[in-house]
Length: 590
Image (cartoon, rainbow, N blue to C red):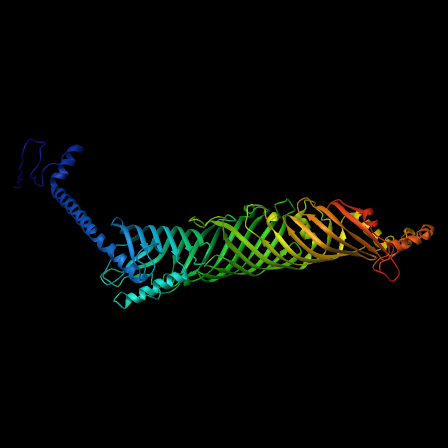
């Protein structure tokens, strides 16, 4: 006969110590939960034990990490010092094991080789990285990305580094660690802890190339973002960078390779890549305007770069309010990283339908008064000195830049050679620009029917064609112009302007205002025909005795003239005051 053994303790609804297989199960939810936990009390003890173990493990890990932080920090400092052969300091370093190994440090400083004080070569405000918890002895800790914030690299001049490296070399003879070679970045450490890096991501970097040249400013680059990948030991790294260009304001996007890092002279580290510069507003330069886009390739070292590129400015215009023109350039340039000077060798440019070249240099100069009496040097701008050669030009392209009028006043083929100098200052570009050269204009024709009619009449009269004999309806009269010129302060001076049409030659000297187009010229008009021939008929016969007063230098008629007014409305007149100074031409005499 079946029997059921039951043992109870306490009231009927109290804890059940032991219940036989035939004990009835509680019917209420509360009673069922209590009945469940009475039968599985071992789970409570197991959970409590695990909690105690986890707490103990967390405390142990915390203690281990706390004790390991100084060791890992020392390893980082030691390995960086070994790779860069330099003094290294790290203000703080912390680790945690939340979701893998996480570490961060602040205040990292690395000095140049052989230097124990003064300006650090590298300063880093903050860094952090994450690594999985799968460390095995003898194998490096794999770090996928190291994040850098506030990186500042200050490269001393080559001469200073040479002295420092020489001092370090002398220290080697006293048992110090050897220096020289390249830094291996992807795998660091020969001790018990090694690191292998996949990439480095940097935000807010600043690169300064110091110079030993007196009166010269250091070359500086503001790098908004930098990412380094393919960190092969002792090899070149690939990079993606965003640089902030101060003037004209814009962002330069660049990709390329950098390295290996030359420990003895980081300025000699190799650099090559492509760049893209878009939406640069040229109005930050007083006197010009437009939106520039530039692409190109560069290679060399941090101190000596060669750049080949092109620019496109579809709306280039002068600040004086001229018409916008399409300006396209191709250039080959060398950048001297020791002082920031740029040599253009050469620039090929197309403005509208005109082609010209320029070569020379762009020199960075300090602001007036800076660098004296203990004052630090401050940037004062650029001194631009170029040689310009317009070999296939159209005068109308350049006139459109200087005039609001939709139609230029003059067309023709232009050749020009000039030296161009734009010193640094706050004045607009057209007021600072200095030009000195010569030009020649062929097949020139005025767009104004009135002016062109006067030119045609001048030509016909100069050839002795009276009004009734003029070739009405013939091909337009084309003229030519040539001479030397100087430009300064927005005023063009022409000391000997030669203007010629069939039958007449005009010699002028005077000035032309770039802003406003003011004309102020005086000179002589020499005609092939005599006065009597130009008048013709019975009036010409009456003027025959007067021919000797106007004949001079082999010309039939020489008349002093003046040209005033503006480029849109020039005024021609005879200088009667100059005529009073003339005397009859003597046969065979001067």
